[in-house]
Length: 266
Image 1 (cartoon, rainbow, N blue to C red):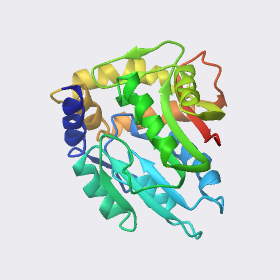
Image 2 (image 1 turned 135 degrees about the horizontal axis):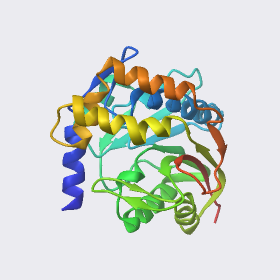
Image 3 (image 1 turned 30 degrees about the horizontal axis):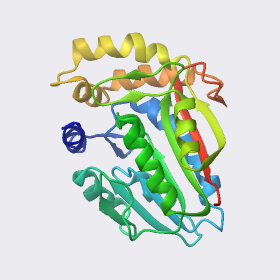
Image 4 (image 1 turned 180 degrees about the horizontal axis):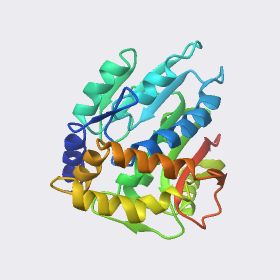
């Protein structure tokens, strides 16, 4: 039942959008903060993807394919793959990155995609509530990677585990331990956090949504809030005031952790 609910949730998310800096977004996160954070993630991922030994690249939970579209402009020869639980998102991804092989899946990477050199997953596993499912997906990805292949994830983390109806914020140690159990080594865990913007998220954004934004639930209100100019301005100011955005993750504060896992040769 949970899988059905989660899939329906993402189908609905895929049908609500807004435009920011000439791009279409679906995120419930304040979009100026999301945009700034995405730039950091792209830069870190680009360093790995540009490696000439990395040829077969898969976006696990590709959404509308914006990451695939961005990386596919590289001059180096690559083969692009993407999977997502949402059919509506995959339809958007086909438009954004037509050269990629794309598939709707909720059970991992299919049997025909083997010897992947790098699999990345951006803000996906926070929406998988069951740790056993994550373990199974990590094992699936490990099996699909070539020897010494990379598995990159970027997820919300914190010193304490927290959970809602459609999300779970785990500790970075939990992700690292699951990865190790599946045969990965942890090569990097960098925390990306915007300390001042947290004040906007905690105190300002909830009040703004409650007073000014209409929607049937929190997710819809959060998406629609990003259409308001004043909401974006307030978020942008808080982003600009946040310093030391990237640091080593010591599991002591809240943010999003960029993990680099590496497949261990048997």
